Length: 361
Image (cartoon, helix red, strand yellow):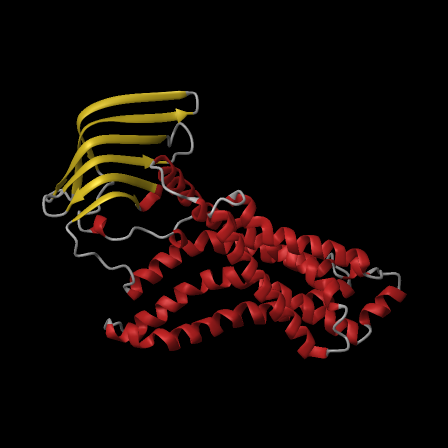
């Protein structure tokens, strides 16, 4: 901040105050609305007030991740609108400072919000998992068997199982996958004809299979086995009857491994691919939406605060609708899933560049 000029510090401080208020205020509003709707359900589960409060605290990162672009938009529209109404932008232009230079501190703030969004997106899968645990959202099923399913386990491991029987504590046609990084932590695949759960050791014994170790793309080591004890496969048979982690509880890398495993089993993964890419596209939208909101806000000097709020709310709603729409078309294969995740950003980025080009500098 010492390298910034006084005007830069002033513009950034005004923008930051609004951004901080909305970035923290939106999650509080979401918590109040959600708690009002679901409190009876949580009390029926005999959850303590402390568990409910802690669960909602763990839910804040996920909510904040989703509202960061809206917070950047509100901060940009309200601050630029205020500067315009008080003729501060006009005074800056008279001093030889262009509109593009004037909004540079806001662009810097939006860039920081983007970095923060990427960080929050990396943390939120763990906080989401803890929230689900506290609220007892994931219940075990009473069924005794399950067929042709994929289970996302801890540590980025994925199980593809043709059949599981709780009463017999057995598995049929099992594939265990783990995505590695390099030769010291290699990728491996274990395929086995069957598996038996050891009640004493709390582990699975896989039988009649092959283990493929991939230290690099150019090297593959295959080891056949009669039996193999997987010390990390500790989920009991009943746990495999429950739904595994949902995409919101997986990191970018874990979700990629899960998608690869589903693709090999022939499942449709379009929606998952869109959701995975949104973990990057949504934070990047912070910078894009700022470039859209800044020139748009120069027209709010007549409408005042109410007009600025209206523009921000309408834009936020349109953006969220576009996200939902692109998720639908991406999951159906109408456009490539990764491209679908970036379409809202492309639309608003194009409009923002057009509006910036038309602003009097």
